[in-house]
Length: 89
Image (cartoon, rainbow, N blue to C red; front, side, top):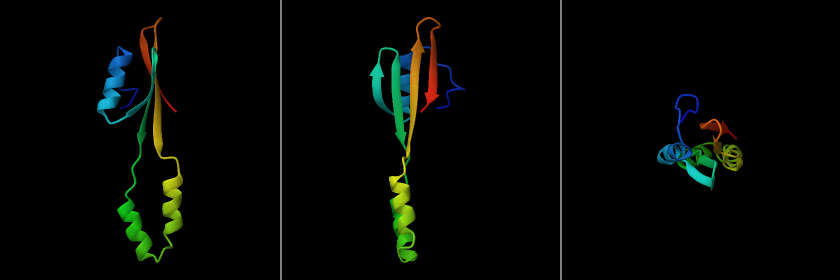
């Protein structure tokens, strides 16, 4: 969902498109929607690496899990210009 490539006419249209693409709706107000999407990591691969390296990989795995792994976008609608703006946060 690239904000520069797709033009939405209404806030509802943008919200539906992001929801269909797997984004969660965190906040919804009259002219504002905040959506987020979790980045997934493969815990099976990290577990195998941890066992194969005799737990040397464990600190890296812990750091990956603790790191903020979320994308967030703020979608706003301006009444005067009738435009939908999407910003990364």
